[in-house]
Amino acid sequence: MDELNCFKAYDIRGEIGVTLTPEIAFRIGRAYATWLQPRRVVIGADVRLSSDELKASLAEGLILSGADVIDLGQTGTEEIYFATRELKADGGIQITASHNPAQYNGMKLVREDARPISNDNGLLEIKRLAERNQWQHSERRGSLHSIDHRPAWAAHLLQYLPHNPQRTLRVVVNAGHGTAGPALDAIDAALRARGIEIDFIRIHHHPDGHFPAGVPNPMLEENRRVTCEAVLAHHADVGVAWDGDFDRCFFFDERGEFIESYYLVGLFARHFLRQAPGSTILLDPRLTWNTLDTLARDGGRAVISKTGHAFIKARMREENAIYGGEMSGHHYFRDFGYCDSGMIPLMLMLNILGQSSEPLSRYVQAALERYPVSGEINLTVASPAKVLESIAAHYASHAASRSDVDGLSMDFADWRFNVRASNTEPLLRLNVETRGNPALLAQKTEELQQLINLSQH
Image 1 (cartoon, one colour):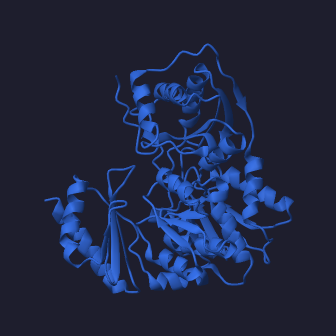
Image 2: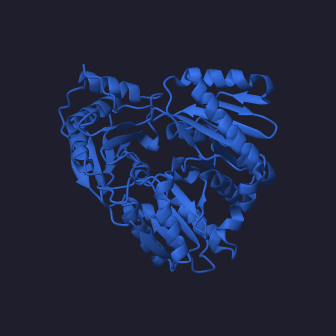
Image 3: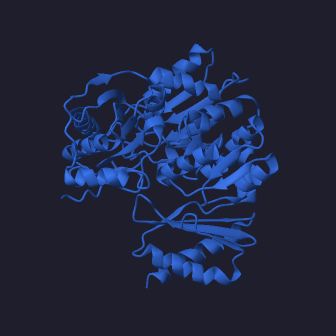
């Protein structure tokens, strides 16, 4: 039995030729089909150089197991979610490693209605079947059909822009040479068909699996400069950058300033609460105070969920939440099957900015001042559990509250923090926020980093 180390908590990711190969993709296809027993499966892939070969092997495994495969071609992850639901398929698989380096690839798996498959509900069983090469024989060989479902997806997105903008917006869009470029062109065509002219300034637009501008991960500060400079050079109203499979998006205001996604969660929550007062909004525990205050002011119900797309989506369904947002740039929508989308936030931003003459910076400035944040700090540690235990003991006597929903969260009168182990990388992730006190923020962030370093010795 081979141990397949490419299986993670809620997806599959591995280094090509090391922990993920076409042969492993074939076995995953067979194991997925054995476990789910699907009649039809939607598949797609990002622009990585290894994606097409992995997709072909995955499709062959599904077909030999009797499943009919619908190949959407080059896609963003959310297009697989959408098509799985709209085409009433029994499952969907996207070949992608999102924002990981170019030598990596992986898969995101869903079942009917785009319900995510994670360690909590089937991924471990699929892993076991793939490791043991245990799959049932099928008398029927499935079929392979290629279709273009992108126009239907783009048309759906326009419902998040119910009113034509009152002004012509200039928007810098940075696809990072990932899958977002052609998808954005389809959205632009749908907008123009409705008579909406948006001045999109495209940078790093052409898909290229070599990623000549660097791995498409706008969370990295060094990757933000080009979008910032383009916003300033073109006097744009807003800048948007996506990761490789565009399930996450990131915004820059008219001054070229990067906006932490935390503050956008509050902005989008307010938008939905104005449409549907009293609705439930999900947030993750890493940074919470601004969102909680927004919901208290605007009459929303807050639910704090464990971080990660599989966990958020399951909780979204349980609570029938209208919207959910993570500080990592994932945004989830009830009308999108409780799934995350990196393009719906663009539609929301066009709607918000298009109905007012106010610049984007004015929409987030008060939140920035009320709740300054450290930005996520990633630290490599040998024993995350030991470190968390040490931090909890250090602050136990004077913390106002403690939560273990995801990692360790502790609140105090004027500041709070969350520290948690990554689900996808060998890292400890630290976030700190204060009540309008940048000096305290700097002090406590440094204090926690020192404590984490000391806890390892």
